[in-house]
Figure 1: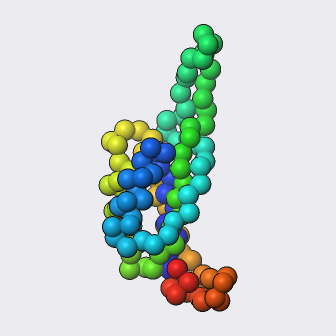
Figure 2: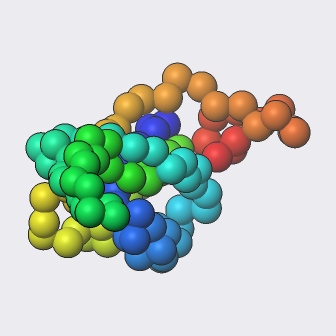
Length: 112
């Protein structure tokens, strides 16, 4: 089992969700987050005053999947979230030791 965590631009969320649905991913967790990488924020003008936006709005997706889907999920997220510009995001893959569905007590792949 793997946990794929992707941090993407907010306006790409629907595209990524559709791409994941097409390859059979049944569920994702979405969190609105803020952060920066190489972009290091930007300067904005508001009511004549200039200020620096250090943390940019992003969306974090968490997807628990069977090992066999890992490459498909990475490819789907990469293609759907890509704009070709700085700040497109990152994908992290970590191993899951155990998953338990609270309602039924199912474990492992059955719980996903």
